[in-house]
Structure formats: structure tokens, C-alpha cells
Amino acid sequence: MEEKKKTIRDIQKMKGKKRIVAITSYDYPTAKIVDETGVDIILVGDSLGMVVLGYPSTLQVSMNEMLIHTKAVCNANPKALVVSDMPFMSYEYSKEKAIINASRFLRIGSDAVKLEGGSEYKEIIKGIVNSGIPVMGHIGLTPQKHKQIGGYRLLGKSYSEANEILNDALQLEDSGIFSLVIEYTTNEVAKKITEKISIPTICIGSGPYCDGQIMVINDLLGLGDYSPEFAKKYVDLKSIIREAILNYKSEVENGKFPEKYWSMKSDEDKKKFMEET
Ligand code: KIV
Image (cartoon, rainbow, N blue to C red; front, side):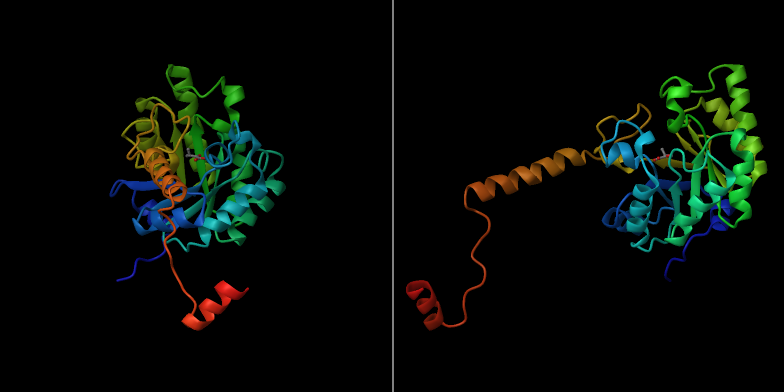
């Protein structure tokens, strides 16, 4: 039987029953391969900026870039739920601007948006959700705020910081998000939040107690230049790609590739063309 397209309800029903598998993708061919594996969620993350576009952080990523890469992923018609990251300054300014920007992702085929931040975005998130756009929250380390947080650091080490993150989670649940990414917090914070809220939590670098896990695909495939300490490399694709290109280079240089392919139809034409022109 053909796999059905996943909805936010399917993801929500997985809480406490089956662990949710999420992974980022940024283009059509990768999204096709990823979707064939049957993962639950494909995130078009703004990590795009760092892992694909070569920017120093996610702060440089524009709405247009997120839209182009979301479109490429959606063109693969994934059965997985497609979530698009709202880039820096596309939702902070006003509720109206946030709703308009969020709607642009759904118009081109995305199923939901994700935005970073805590209770300070409650009203903005409510506005987006009330417009019929599913929102995934993102707390703990929020890379768009790395300058304010003081770098890409582990959060929730002290009681007060842990409590603040827990409070953010509760407020965001109240604002109507359908799931919550918890990035680079202590295990205790992720565990407590997962127990306290009724929507699924999806961890990255926060330990094993969440309802699901997300990874940046470039880290998992060994393509990342600056993978975080919590990333797990499942294959060293960089070496495999380098090896293939070196083989190609050497075959071209040595005349081994390409071989002779197609010849003209008749020997007479061939002779005439080769010898008389
Ligand atoms: O942009 C991204 O890839 C993300 C994940 C790290 C959750 O936000």
C-alpha cells in the first residue's frame, strides 16, 4: 500500500508511541532520497545558510533563499511533513509581517513553519496559528540569537536557566504550536519538558528523552565543515565524493574517459566527412 502524506495530526499522535525521525534537506535530489527512507519530518532549516550557502551564521539567510530551497524540496513531493524555517527578521517585527511571511511557505507547498524563540513570541505564534498555519517551536539554543545568548553554548545548566526554558515550552504549547524542537540543552531540561507538555518534543543535542530527534543532514553524511559536538556522522561522504572526483580527473587526464561512443551511419559519409571537409 502506498504511504500516505503525513500531517501534523500524524506527528502529534506519535507522542509516547513511536519516536519521531526528522532530518533537514535543502534540495530536490536529497529530499527524494530522504523521503524514500520514510522519515517523518523534513525540515528545510535555515542551517541552509551555513551548510549549503557558506554563510558565517544563519543570520544572513533571506526569505527568498528559504523559499527557493523549500520549493526545491516540495518538488520532490515528500510524504514526510515538510517544515520550513522562518529566517531571521521574518517574524520578529510584527504579527502581520509574520503571518504574511509564514503564508508564503504554505503557498509553495510546505506543511508548516518553524520559528525560534520563547514566550516573547507567544502573540506572534498565536496569530500565525490562527491563520491556519501550523507552527513548530524551537527553544534552548536558538542559533539566530547566538549573539545575544553568548555563542553556541549548552543551555539549562543552572536551575534558573532550566526553569526559564521550561517556562518557554509551556508558554509556546499554550500559543498553539504542534511540536517543539529543543536544541542543545541539558538532558534534564529536555526530559522535564517532554513529560510536562502534551505535544511532541524533537531534540537536537539535548539527550535521549525527547519524543523524536532531528539532525542536519550534512552533519550526518559527513559533509559538514563545522559540525557541532552532538552531531553523529553516519558516513564520511566527503571522502567518498573526493575519491570519485579524483578518479574522474585522473581518467580524463589519462584519456581513459570518455570512450568512443556513437559513429556516423555509413562508412561512406564518415569517410567523406573526415577526409574531405
Ligand atoms: O536550521 C536547522 O537546521 C534547525 C535544526 C538544527 C533544528 O533549526
